Length: 218
Image 1: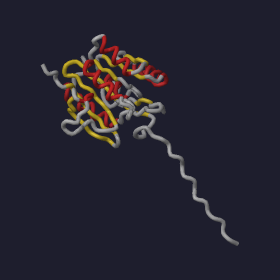
Image 2 (image 1 turned 90 degrees about the vertical axis):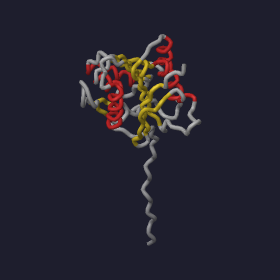
Image 3 (image 1 turned 120 degrees about the horizontal axis):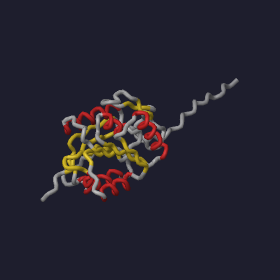
Image 4 (image 1 turned 45 degrees about the vertical axis):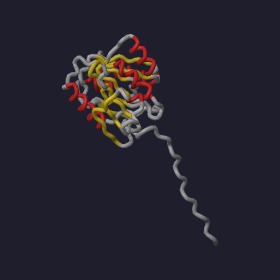
């Protein structure tokens, strides 16, 4: 009898991924709540900064600030898991304002804040650009701004010009993106023209940068 053809096993359907895959929790690296795990919701576009990258970034920031967090006012415009904002709060930041648009994310951030008794953290539900515009209009200034938005949606292009108005003198912006914020001389886009990249590195497909506003020309 002729043999029946053997069917190839069905291939698993490809699952679209936004950025690198992550586990369902991250942890706070240093400070008062060191090693505390933070849960990560399985929400579209939620891509927490990995522990190893955060450790590097906060070493950069510590170097720039001489490890002085006591008077730091921090704005986290795309809070997500809260890994960046709670890390800053754990290290003693005077105030941390965390912004996210997704209601489930905001609820989880509120739960974490309550468990940690993080009185130096304020959580706002809203559009990051609108919140930033309102803060700039009332003259609010920050020492450190975290920008870790979804990639490929021009969030950095729209937020960085506003951040120039939101930073205190010598303030810093931490920015993650899907591409390096570096261009050949003369090709730098207008939205990056006012910024100097102090430190930059790459982990997998994630490019991360520490920025400082260039001094205004008199």
